[in-house]
Amino acid sequence: MTAQMAKRVTEEYYSWFCGTELSGLERGRHLVCSAGRDQYLPAYGCKFTIWILVKDGLCVGAYSPKYQALFEELEKGGEIIPSLNQRFPMKRMELMVFESEKLSSYGEAKALAPADYPLYEAFFRQAYPDAEPDGWLKDYFTQKARGCFTGYLSGGRLLSVCDLPDMPYMQEKIQHTGIRTLEGERRKGYALCTAALAAHNLLANGVCPQWECSAENTASIELAKAVGYREYGTAYILEEGEK
Image (cartoon, rainbow, N blue to C red):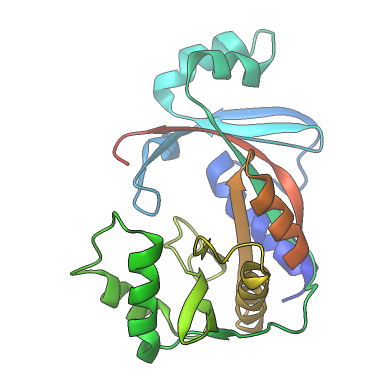
């Protein structure tokens, strides 16, 4: 998968959230009322009732029909994002797009196989001490660990892992790679090697790597850039429903 293909797939993916095709849009404001924003997204455990992308002179997105009157009022004048931030707990996310691979050596990072589950379970219990993995974690790992589930192994332990969370759209074409490194093992290059190998393996399988994080998470943004992503835009999201 080339950088141009990754950009095209990434734009197609975010078009689902925006309720309109991003490719070829002229600069300016493009906001639509969409029943799709009332759909529950199991991958996130909630609804994104407002989802707006700001990039390159564009303000484009979609909102639930229940907010139609509000947006009609906002469209009459003023700045959309500041107005929404005053009314709602909007989440601000930095979106990245894959540009090129920057690493060719990955240290002790490796693709995880189903046989590596005991290592992953030990990692998970240490990384998420308040979680309860019994009854679901092994099935999740066994299903996902088939080539692109990646971890950094040292001293017989997994120290950093890129998992493969479920995607709300285009599951066969694009994949987020969540990264988690054990406390005490950070800033040692493990996350960089792990995330770079995860992206490499996805690309080799014809899948577009996807990265997004809180806009305040500068460490994650810099890690993404070191792997080979660049900044794509900023999303402003209202989450509602179960989480």
